[in-house]
Image 1 (spheres, helix red, strand yellow):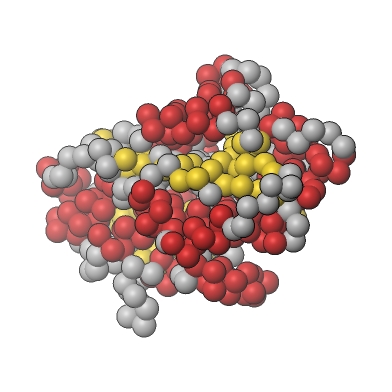
Image 2 (tube, rainbow, N blue to C red):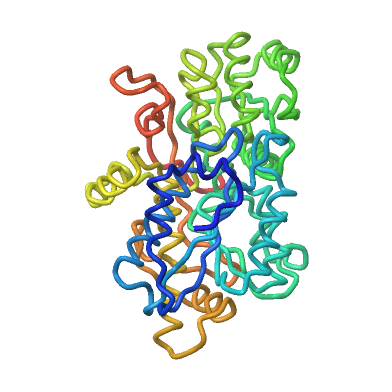
Length: 412
């Protein structure tokens, strides 16, 4: 395994690294899967869990002889930087270039963040290198209206094992209207590609559902004090605040909104469904926050009991729902490699991309296949609420984010 940053080594641990390298086998055919995730910054813990999901799938495949007889190596790259404090689009672009110039890289898992995706997609397209993201949800990346920008070479190269914010934002607006009976809301975003897109989608649906949108504002993730904005929201008398935000700004929104408006309904997307919200936001500030993920909640499914146990045994911690979608993303690529090898074609990035596009793969989520743009047909959005369970560590995402159910779909 080749790691781009020392932080990634620390997060994986020496035993994990040793397990990935293994003995050298010069006679074994091999290909490489790239992985680009923010292993530095506010989302590092969640990114590491996502990394572990993909690595577990690859390790299991190699243990069985490799897909189509190929040993799969891993090129793990960090798209987070200390300067950005989270994902960094410039670093993500650098990572994309590293993957494209390495002829052994036939596909990639990631990125985690849509801001990274927007920086990477044009470069990956020019290199005809497919990536399967387990968590980036901005709709533009796979929208044919933006094909000239994000897939300039023509073919779809950006595939997802989650749905998009075209559903995550609106479905949460439906939940707030139908279940929480919210009449007025103030919308905040963190100025990033993910946060803006999610907030836009939520706001449009909130208005359709008859909610009064009292205002919209942005927060800079690197600014420390959001109290003036939060005081304005409080003084407007909003029933709720919705945040399109990653964890870096999200933590400050959690802590400072508790100081100013502790009783208000507060919600966000999967950027607020992260360990940092619990560990850095803390209790009681995080208590009551609603969040969503752009996928089914499967950790409580009895069919996954053995897989969860395997993940915990391998990594010493519980998986997240996006560890599942990351495992599935790797399965999609592994199945494509095997399909190409069995067909007798050369296993290269062009043939693997085509096999991903055409494939139907059995995964933890069920059978996954992609439309011509790289999106799934399934648009499930799952809703959670933070409720402190003292029987578990306060930063335990699995047990502190309580699953409520599937957010209602539909436009009215």
